[in-house]
Amino acid sequence: MLKRPMADTKFTIDYDWWDKSDLDLKTYLLTRLPIDEDVPAEADTDEVDLVDSETGEVYRVDGFQYIVQTYFSQLPEDFATRTSLVDAVFCVLLANANIPMTAQEIADRVHRPVNTILKTVGGPKIYQGIRPLLDE
Image 1: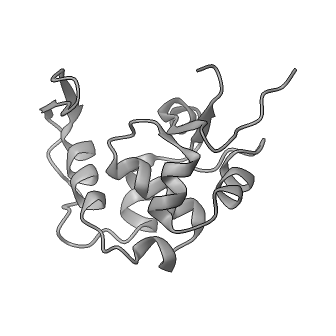
Image 2: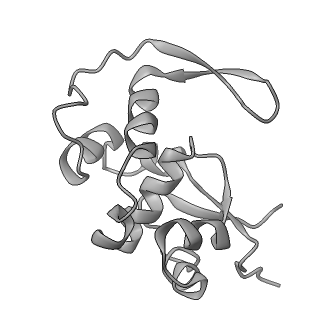
Image 3: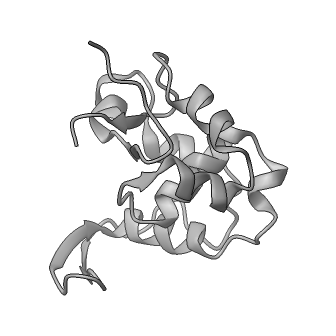
């Protein structure tokens, strides 16, 4: 039986999807999303140590990923309502360091109904690598 995403289903960006597609994530971010001159195109790609505020675990992320995460976590509150739903969900997940979020949490952040989130990114078509985690 196929599992269907529900309001408590978590979503994440599948970076393997990007690797297998003919799209380049860094190019996409620099050309499609509202990244301005504050994020240099040739951002240092050295790794950065981050600490998970909930677990205290230290993990390493790519320097560009860190810059992007920081940038998207500082977008104005109304950004999500001024962009496409897919871009808004993508940006919310990036701002959250791609830590899985439930459809309801995403809906609250993008100010859209949870059913709209589920219909858009919970269906069979994968947009920007956004996938439900149905095995949890």
